[in-house]
Length: 376
Image (cartoon, rainbow, N blue to C red):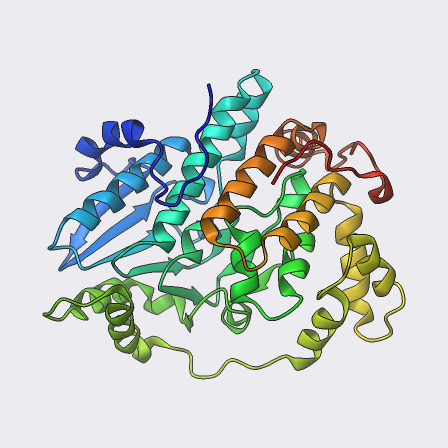
């Protein structure tokens, strides 16, 4: 099967989405993985796989896409609210076991189709013409961050944990992250977060630009009603309507989030505008400040796929400041490359399937990692 590239309008699986449209607005059963309901003029979309921390399957991506298309066409819907069922998290990312099974069965095109559909959905949210609110309560990683990245308002709680841990399984931080991390985060953090998978907790998510406001998790149940009541008459554009919703949510906001200039200076000094990953590592070996952070970086990098690290660094450098449609197109090519590399299957096997936590990377040394045959 020949895959269409990620395009500006992001609609390249219309037929599959159409098959879901008839059912998606009638998601009533408690076991449906995507549940859609209305509160006032807000469409509420709930990811409903709590035991899997709401990880995304291909069918869920199609259902989400169909719901957003229907909401865009319905004048009575003024905003969309995305959330996840259960206390563990909003969304842990894509269903890696589903992808691993397809690749192991000799069906890599199915895995690529998953990424293509996921990236199209994420791009749709970035380009949507109505306000989108994401309640990122709990774990929000990988594909969960892909859903949140294009939202107008991302709500974090004290339970929120955000990260891009993909290099640990021989993959790379995708869903547009190699582009939008540069727009959201202070200098150096795109490289730091993307390469190491460093976890952001609660207030850190807001401080570093990954979320817009921090609220107490006990107050989350009332947020959807508040958002729905924030509607007002008139034909507003997305930005104006989003500002109106943000003002309505001020009563929930945690008043102060402490700065951390020491960490910000350290990240900028050792990760921003470095020529190569090897140059970053060489600099870290000489650092005197923040020794604990330096040592943690070395531990994290040592357990990650050298090829995935090299690919991540290449993409972060290539996609800084590029239009998002092109970022997604380059990430699709990178996904094609890495799922054909032995490190991806080995990483998933070691970390998720067998859980022996002992992947045999090929090559094992960063100095020997090569990104050959990839055209971005």
